[in-house]
Image (cartoon, rainbow, N blue to C red):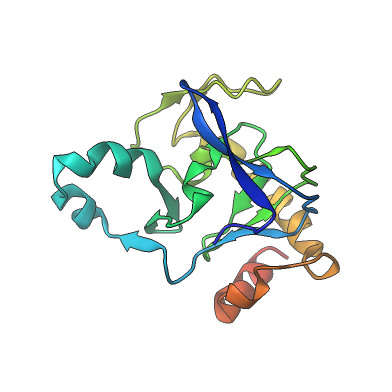
Amino acid sequence: MLHPATELQFLGSKIGYGVFATEHIHRGTVTWTLDSLDRIFLDAEIKALSLTYGPNINKYIFRVGLKNVFSWDNAKYINHSCKASCLGTPYGFEVAVFDIAPGMQLTRDYAATMRQDDASFACGCNEPICRKVVSGADANKFRDYWKKALKEALNDFYSVSQPLEQLLDTCCFKRAFKENK
């Protein structure tokens, strides 16, 4: 489930939609968590789907750990940025890694969940640190940066409002904290 202080906005025909903050979201706030309405697909299930589903599955599925998630809500519209405002854990939730002001887009770095053999794509995030091409190999380069940013964000977890806290899987949440110490 996506953080409640967000809204969907149309960004144009090239990008489509994006998710924007409607209120200040502090670093360390859970911005998305896997919930019982999200659909988990195994790789074999994706391959077995009719080609009719292909464009939507390929565009809107994202990975959480080893799971392929098709989100029921607007989380599927969170765009990539090389300077992502949110980073995911393998435990089914994402957190803001810096303060997100009202009107600012929530983004994730797609490379953080890509496999090494996933097709690369041209990036148009226009950030000063834009990599121009995003690939599964980026994980090797940025893993330490992502881990540090996530650790710092999780340090703020208990000092900020957490509207999605009741949806977090307690066991996995504790493992995420333990691994990011």
